[in-house]
Amino acid sequence: MRAADLDLSELLTVDPRGGELRFSGARAILLDAVAMGLLRKQLIDSVGAAAARAILTRFGFAHGYRTAEAARAELALESDDEWRDAGGRIHTLQGMMRLAPGAGGPLSPGGATVEASYEAEQHLLHLGRADAPVCWTLAGFASGYLSCVEGRDIYVIERRCLGRGDASCVFAGRTAEAWGADLEPHLPFFEAHRLDASLRRAAEALGRAERRLKTRAEALSRAAAAASDAAGLVTASPAMRRVVELARRVAQVDVTVLITGESGTGKERVARLVHDASPARARGPLLAINCAAIPEPLLESELFGHARGAFTGATRDRAGIFEAAAGGTLFLDEVGELPAGVQVKLLRALQAREVRRVGENRSRPVDVRVVAATNRDLAAEVSAGRFRKDLYYRLQVVELRLPPLRERREDVLPLARGLLAQAAARMRRPAPRLSPGAADRLVRHAWPGNVRELENAMERAVALAEGRRIEAEDLPEEVRSALPAPSAPAVEPRVRTLGEVEQEYILAVLARNEGNQTRAAAELGIGASTLYRKLKAYGRGPAR
Image (tube, rainbow, N blue to C red; front, side, top):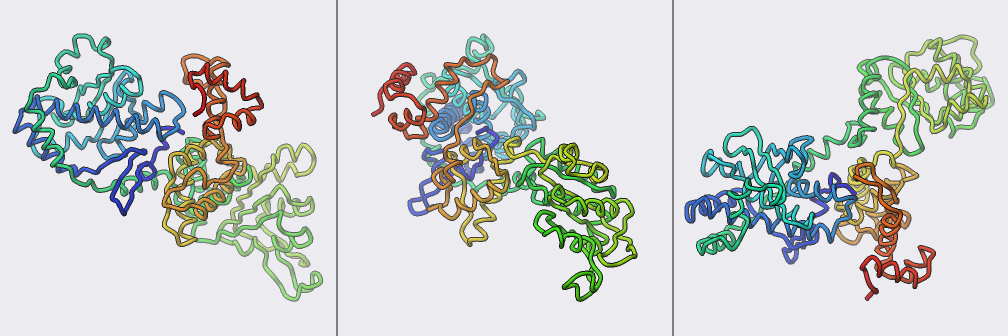
């Protein structure tokens, strides 16, 4: 699971009876932004700017440290880099700030660039433009979060700030040694023992100022909509964005399109996108036919029509789907299954733009764009003599290859959330949310059945879920048992040793078996005593 996959609605749980909120598993409260702004003003007016900064920095530090601890217990992220990135993602989801597109974290060489800060906004509202950076809580949060993640003290300092008129807020994080003398002016605001007694009065004011914060559902909805195409395609991944961009471009010209990809990848949705984006064809019909689902004796009639009396049962003249789709688009699904005789006639229809009904001796002009799709390797079929080379080239004027879901994991969770909502609507149930554990399993699974398999899994989850969250137990067995693949990611500074890979895998199997060493050893194919020795070497000790 990646930091970018985190969704506020899945991290936040609500007990409507007791009024208890939990964020990433930890008890939480909601605070009103304007109330926080008024608190800031009261603090500055009462104890001065320096003491107010110390209070808010320490408050932010505690918030960030606790957030990291809770996230460690609840989430399963892939790497240390993902844990670092998750801090900014979580703070963004909480409505505190908005990172600039492509911005790095505070530890990156250029620091973290923030294009919107609730803290700077509230300072400007209640106190006007400042002479120095004012996002004290945000700096404290980043310091606390990174200190917990890194296992050492990290000090994040704001170098530029919207609150003093800069174009953005920029936060840089380093250790005390790396900061050197530059940290001296800022260090007192991080150290609690340097605060005077007036800070306790201000801390009490902080408790009295707590208010509920309106949800960020609209912002999340806009983000989800930005990742979804009008045709229902999710395009969070670069691979799918390239497919959609090419589909929109080819829709502007009247050429034949071949869509290839594994079964269940969404070829018909891409065909609809090509049709809907076509200025000449969108007002016409989009008709589809599955070439593998119709018996060969009837397929020619379905495609090209027939005359009365052409064969037994032909009691009247009948137009085929080519004529019915006139002015629009004809989607030929599973075109690789066409028998040889029908391939010849399809080639003529594409070349001459006319069809001849079965039992007639005259041709009829047709005005239709053909979009074909197949899960076969047509080039290999041509080499094997099962598909005509000239028809292949006629269909493949532009080819759109849909990547399988395992190659576009960024799309898994946005797709899953949309499919959950659709399934819940069909079952007339409230739309549930994914728990972090369920989301992690979804991202790990290889999805051999692609989007169709994911859709079935989400429908099953909605049917079985007991509450408003989808838990890992609600997913199919093959999804629940998904384990991280042992690998040596390119982003790591070194290749991991075989022992490190083995340790990661063994601990993942043990976690899946809820700490039961006997079951884990059986699944791993090793003896229980061998597993005990390995766990002891990892510092895990005996199971309790």
